[in-house]
Image (cartoon, rainbow, N blue to C red):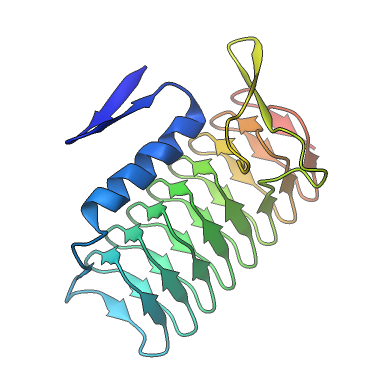
Length: 208
């Protein structure tokens, strides 16, 4: 258990607490303080930027992309054509977001790649993850029941209406995979094409 502290603080005990901490951080960094857009960024004049945003140096944003702040995009990342980055998203260094991807209220760590036409919602994606085209992290049950997560051999109800997935470092998820709400995928795992993932995946696993 840790805490994120500035003038106020956010306790981080469970994975979903990271989203609260991320929202707190972006509010303090950006809201009411204006945007930071590096002169060394490469933003198409056909992209839409809705402030406030932090866009660091060597970030590329292609035509048709919409960045709807508050959003943080770190150095060297690539935001593809017609993608949508929604509020309270943090994107790390050297991340690649493909054509038509939608990301909502999520944390994407360094060197991760998200393939075209994917959806990442209310999720935490580790470093060096590869996500294939057309993959979705579902962030709400269609019958609107509580989302639950297994934590240390206990099943806990997540105190959020929406929560997606937690995906560990260096995991490779193939095309057209659906990850159900509240599922965890351990580091260095491989999820094969077309899987509907309705269970947690231990580290170093393969799911076909």
